[in-house]
Amino acid sequence: MPRLSPDPLIHSDCDLTATTLGHYTEIGRGTRMSHTVLGDYSYCDRACDIANADIGRFANIAAAVRIGATDHPMDRASLHHFMYRSADYWDDAVPDAAFFAHRLSRRATIGHDTWIGHAAMVKPQVSVGHGAIVAAGAIVTRDVAPYTIVAGNPARLLRHRQPPDIAARLVALAWWDWDHTRLRAALDDFRSLDAPAFLARHGG
Image 1 (cartoon, helix red, strand yellow):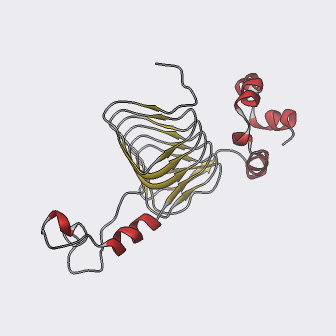
Image 2 (cartoon, rainbow, N blue to C red; image 1 turned 45 degrees about the vertical axis):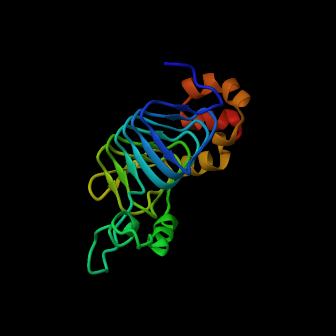
């Protein structure tokens, strides 16, 4: 694997539309991403489908994850996209701009230092808090608190990743905002210290 650089690494067969990628980011092969912001150091593995999402720094997104899955108008006479992608069907029809604007407004939010497991789905207008883990195959339909682990369909709390007091101190420390040089200087501590010891050494 090539060493990552400040420039995003985008693998083959990706389809990116209206997307902003931060430094040291990586997009896995066959991923589709639209109207998304991906923060520094975050990555997604192969065959992800991500739309209308704000993703923080250091997010770890496994293969086949779907975030912000686009929805259909359930209150109308039909669910089908002929209603809003109308120009695909008739020369004299125009797209339903209001529906597309509504869809774009329903953004999913993924916090810093998160882990979204293989084939998980995060629905529109859902927030996954900093430090949280979404288990493989989970369907997230409601907000996930910071530093918790959720699993299942629909996703429910499995346990806390860190005790609430430690979680609050990690959020306050906000190490994900450190610059590249400071992260390198703290690398040995990231590797060798548990969270309380890391906080004690780094002022959290």
